[in-house]
Image (cartoon, rainbow, N blue to C red; front, side):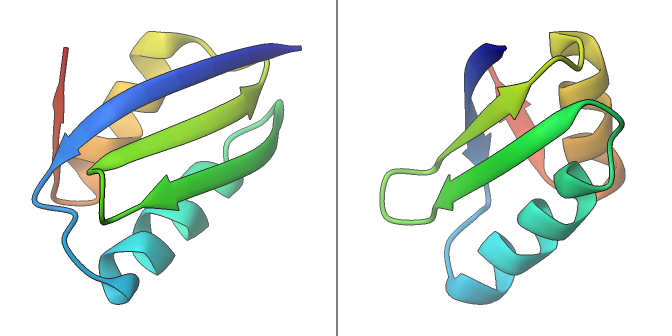
Length: 66
């Protein structure tokens, strides 16, 4: 199982955390999602590709930073 940490610009509140968590949890191979609006980061656990995680964040209306 992999762990990815992605900075997400625009994730600033609990509502944003819920959106990110919901979208990423739906990805095949994801076992857990831990968004943190205070740090602007989301940790994703499982076996999705980093590119798929980034695409999903963009589709949710947020900007994943490198």
